[in-house]
Image 1 (cartoon, rainbow, N blue to C red):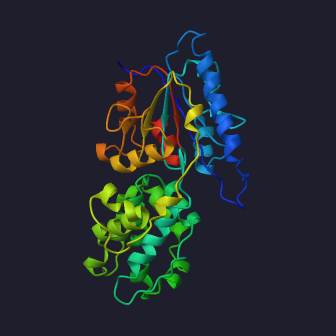
Image 2: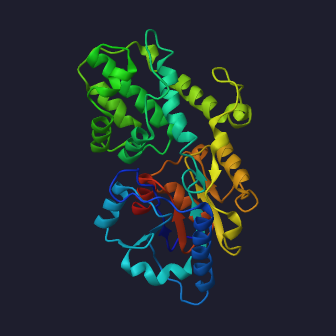
Image 3: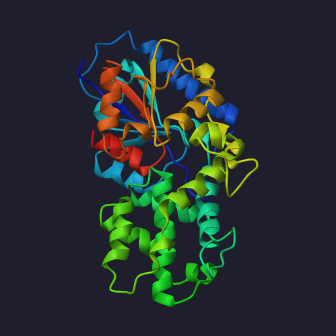
Length: 349
């Protein structure tokens, strides 16, 4: 059955100190609020005639400035914690499917994956001859700027792009002190702005370094499999064998995955609504997350209810979303995401 409708969601924290920042409410209040919203939509769903198309953005009381800009350009209005087109208001009651992103939506990952984004870059740079790099080399704000550039839903690709920035700076400034390089041009803001101007994604970061008329670094310094493995080990820890099929080589011991925490009380999701996930996680990573959330019985992976990295679809390309909604025979769906790529997925659907 072809997809006849869509409702799309976006939620994102403002960074502390930026205009519009507001502290998130307690988890219990958030659980109640989201559950009430789901229940209200579910109870009203049978009372009105189905419509043909919906676009909506909603989530916790947080949003990124780039997302807000895109929403404003696309004719959305803002009411409370929801962002939606005016013509969509009367269609919320027809939601029959809820599709979730995982990181930042179902799970709080700012102390796990975001931390590993930072640590893995520093750890990798220290393996290069003569390089020094402290663990606090990068901040979560640095990582957010890559996310906002677009095309970095894959955290491995994001980590590759950050390593490339430091290698590029090494060519420009002739120092292997990563702390010094971090302060020099191009800054993270300048680099990610250039990436965004070129259309986002890792390929744009690689093009920036390729187009520079400078001597290259030693080819072995940009070792993507090694960077990826270090990221995987730091994050998964004792779960590395289950998630990736190998024992840790660089970082034995507990992984930062232990700090993943649920954002949503699964018991509050209405039973009569079809559920799915569209995520940049691998299949095994997504399965692990659903078990932590207690959703493994309602969202079965692999299967028609989900798209993961293993399926070869990457947000903001809309093909993965379209495939899930088609499989579920969804007429009107709510998508809840937390990044600019989630919003772009919806806008390009």
